[in-house]
Length: 419
Image (tube, rainbow, N blue to C red):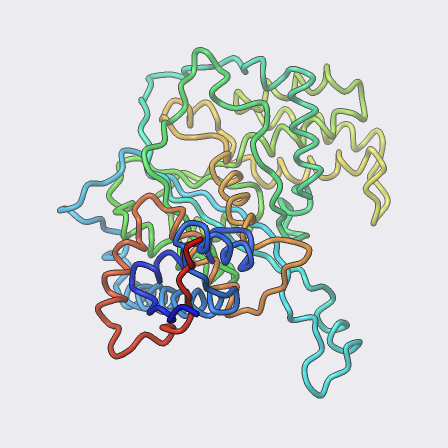
């Protein structure tokens, strides 16, 4: 039998990467075996990931505490000696994952625990901090809505995406966010005469903590990236009121923008109470041109004619009219799309939608159940590895420098024997 090998700093980095990014700790075990030619058990990988992830969370929380100690004017200032993004964009959304909270604790009956917690599904918060480039125009560079946003197949895909995510309820602040709202067939890039902002770098923040705590996480990372010094900035999200509270508290200098795709999906669903596509196409053009007040007036007329849907129903066509009316009324001030295009700001949240999917590849699954500490550690690491500023590269220098004595996991691996 071969002697056991010490887990070197480089192997530790590979173990943590695999445990944070592959679909499970079992897959990470196989990945380390194939790529590093070391046998490390899934259990030991999990322990190493938790240790390193908790260290990153501790660093994050320390940075937040330092930010909170600053006076407000200082918090809002950028750094003169650092390059600022041409366009600084913050996006946020969320997904879901399963936690062990619903399992009965010692001394409690399972029924009692489940009654208190209702469900084992919990919400994750995910944020994108995007450094972008774009042109500023004297007038709207694309006053006519692109065909891709009004074509029947694209419209149906938008509506299907919205239905899969439960975004109606989420945008009204009723239900937890879901995670499958990814790319649609209709994107800003389809407009031949309109060039949306181009992405230069993306940083990611992810957490299972409350929205209040997550707002501080976003602001802390944004300040590190010198977002306050950007001449143009935007905060793009769906219509959930929590998003706008975070924007007002932590990014008041950013232009708040309601995601165009969510707006179009509401319009499509509500239009089916009349003639469907014809009404939708009219509304879509109005939304694109920022004339949301006309859409609201039409919805009010439909509601007065058909009445409101009965409570606790989603199958009645009137339900979608009610929801659309509430959505547009609440978010009209964040839907001046012609001005956003003129300023060279993004009008869809495509980047955050796809990023949520990337987070969920690791954290979400019907067979995955997490405790609070472990999930926070993995979310932190997964987001770090997805960030273009490479925070983990700097972290490893600090982490290895702080390690003293023998490696606690020196017995974790066995070298692969040659054939």
